[in-house]
Image (tube, rainbow, N blue to C red; front, side, top):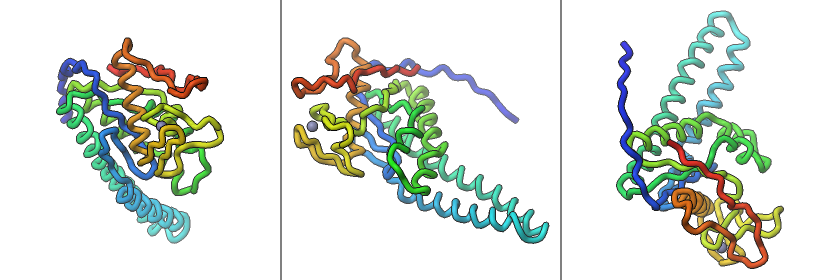
Length: 242
Ligand SMILES: [Zn+2]
């Protein structure tokens, strides 16, 4: 039996505090408050399934009729198992972020993920890494965040992902040479103000800043402090959801 329950979401809280969330490659998610969810365990499980799947697929194309059928059945069961595991992880992460936002009376800012495929694939990467990024997993996590935030009355802001990972959250400076970046892998080192730290934490903070600029339209707008350097990279076209 399917039962439909209709529920009116509570009014979204008005607030000028914003938690930024960055979805990354090594960390699944990193917030501007420093919480992060490491992807190592998840990646291990998914790599394991992917190997198993490849082996089974090879087997399913040869062998006797009955063994081919058995392989196909096993493949189907595997895909369900992997999906459930991923969903469990995404539920846990989104629940933690939303409840944190609720208790601190903050809004949540995310990157607009419609372009994540392109962004994550900007640099040449191994086949393994590409498989990890081009998945429905990030999409699902975002959906979970969206509906949990709505139910909890937490507002959600989407910001454009351009330059969020390359901008220093403290001085808003981007490397003057477009071919270079202050970010290298997991590390971020600003050449202007000297801030040094975790690259995903920096990204999450830039997202939070952009989100805050949207939430208070007449507040201060973001501009690079460096004189004579006016790249309109952080011009904010973010939208408020719901
Ligand atoms: Zn800086």
